[in-house]
Image (cartoon, rainbow, N blue to C red; front, side, top):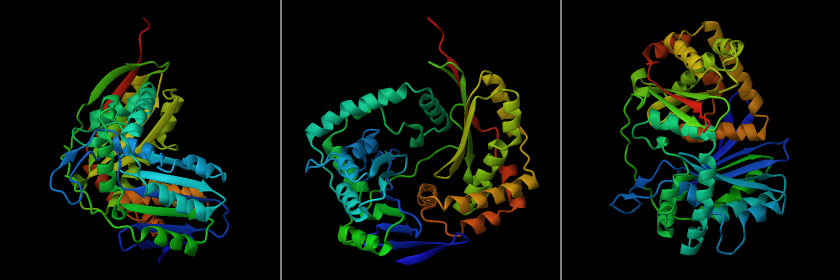
Length: 425
């Protein structure tokens, strides 16, 4: 295994890529009893059209199939339920499908070796039949209907549909009830064989465990599994501009909600390393709308927000800043956000202060297993590998470069959704 020193953090990450392409990331702690392990594929809901490995014809599968497949991995041919297996040792387990990856996890303090072996075993044991696929459709359909009634979930979907023209990030991860009922066991095997291949997967283990034993188990379990090749996907042509600038919708809410998406085309900003550019965009968002921002203090004092949420999404040549909030005065809040975006000025003192805060957070997060996992996952998915010198890279952010980026961003390229209260009948 390659030793990767996490600079300024006093930790060593162990990395290897097996001969079949599977990536292994191990971060052992000397002072922890708990562990977290994840077996993941770089395949999520946004991939529904592709050329399967070894074939020439492009196929399209129903929307929501990645999430459906994740559900079906918990039904094993031997009748053992993975949730039951893990719970017998007091171990937590779960799985999650995102736009660009799916992960299967377990976490606990006992039976590390047995649990690692079983995690690998069940994720490599798909079992789809006509009967169990049909049974799952009703279960997932009910889940989708439940989410469809959640206002924040609706708001996020509306905003994505208005930001993106063609990119599948505009489509709900779970798909739709209509699409779910189109899924067949053949579709599931096509997706599994195309994307659950070692050269498209990785294992991440963090916490108190024996790294050599973990590595031995992973190699013995997975090194001899053959690749099925890699599925081919086409590049998505996504315009720079948002699709819909403004929309009003209604929902069963007591307080109106708003959502704003600022769409930034990366290639208009110059040539940057992905991680460095991401840091600069994150910095802009944090200084403008973060918890200690002047904007946040102002709208709070004006009693324009009940809650407030912001994040930065990175996809295929675009960064998107998302802002969501509930407000008794939604129009006034939207105006405040637009005013803030129309006159962006980054103060050097704020810039330098935020760098120090970020560095302190990096040091703090590495001492907590869950936080370390989240940090490493961000790196592996967003940047295709762990950023070992993150503190040095944060420290190296340049105020002049920051302002050059600000000058090039079109801060008017926004989509706005206002969610009103449904009128009483």
